[in-house]
Length: 132
Image (cartoon, rainbow, N blue to C red; front, side, top):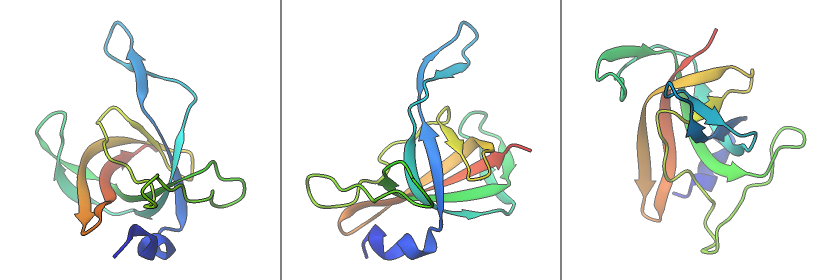
């Protein structure tokens, strides 16, 4: 089942950006360049193991990232496709990536799961602690 079959269950757009460098204290520094993804977001507590500390923690938000989109003009951007004709999905993620939710809250990434199907990468499920 293609990730395109799931798009109806992904009513949100989230922004992601990766750090370009780190300051003297190890804090990530970002540019203004975002990637946009269709997403499903559920606000509930989930016990996960933090990839940074190795401790069990509670994530308060789960985000399923689907296909990458162009910058949204209204609600959604157009889904972007690769040279193979498949939708572009997130292939890697790191704990210091910045995920901005539709309410402009930035979530701390605690853990993630990469899901694939018969065609390849399907979606990424991210457990985050949403800022207040």
